[in-house]
Length: 261
Length: 261
Image 1: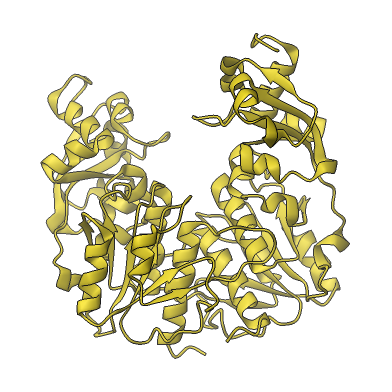
Image 2: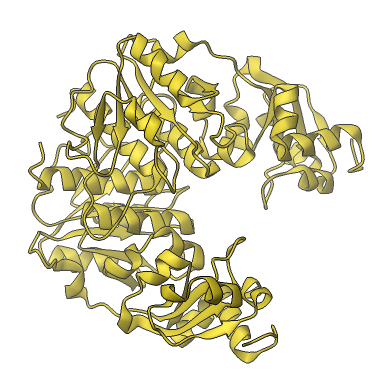
């Protein structure tokens, strides 16, 4: 059992929790909590750490995996949450190809979310969560978007991070070009547009562009879209929350694509 | 200018920021930031506080209101945000009647959100924001739901708190009964239901029940609904974020009610 916070492994866990740079250099990130741990794909797990108390009470929740034990206080020190659940995995970052983003196992048409400069980890995670629910085939983020491997983002995905293919591009315009080469139509949420978001046909390949929480899309990015769409808003509201807007668009595509009505 | 954090007014501002009890006893809450300050309804404002620097740079953003100046350090001490914008208002809590929740100026049918035990301030605020956008006529919360006057909730409403009528009831079942007495049909988001959320007709009066983030609605509450509805989810996801789910339902009602398609 590791009982000291100056232990080298413990120091590295803290680095992985706090520093995007450490995560990128090591190609690893941390997943915390019983449910998120249980869903880690087997091939992604590198190491498992548990608190002493967790091991006593929940040995069955380790699924026979090899683990290291941390004293409860050391686990608390390493944890990113206020009330740690006592289990975490060090996980290898997945590497998706562009093709992965456009190909669904069930053969459905590509449905891609394109994100420019999203800043809130909770928003990004929620987009993965809603994206999985709505059936997106992939998510493309630019590198100014908050780190998908940030502990709060990972948590907010509720497991979507394991199941929604994604890539990070230097500039979101690369992502737009990639999709347009595959004849995927790009829609940009834009406040001044008159075309309502539920008017276009999303049953063939489509991509939705979502911009920064405060400023929306940059002009250059918005200009590359094939069509602007608008989510109608009553009252005096200037915009919706970015993850809500993304979810409304993805679920409108989902609505059109299923035979539920 | 107030230069000391032991000043009585300063101490009270901190109480109003941090303690729901202080807010309830005084019937007041705090609104921070330039945009949120600018939108406060005139009749709601009790006091205005600005930082020394804000007063120098933005005297026009005070709209001629009477104010007290705080030394920058004192303003930082009082602020709930990491990078304070330098202006805050002490605001009187609004008092709505049940009728206010069911009556829209434009005569549209009642569209009410009913919230049971929502715990995340950001989720609650986002529901007010989306609610204003989608055109809800009111929001009913139970008292186990997080405080609508919490600084983070207020911020997340993006002004919706000023414009969406709301009441807090001891038990959400009271809210359900109130609506049912007015022949408003109650829909509960329920994971095991087979009726898709876009099947019912929401063009007449309706209410949407949303439950706790982790546990959903209590059984007793769900049983009072007139109809269960389900938001379809792909992948292995167990649920959507509560504010996303609420937004999808409210915007489905919005979609049915406008003539946009």
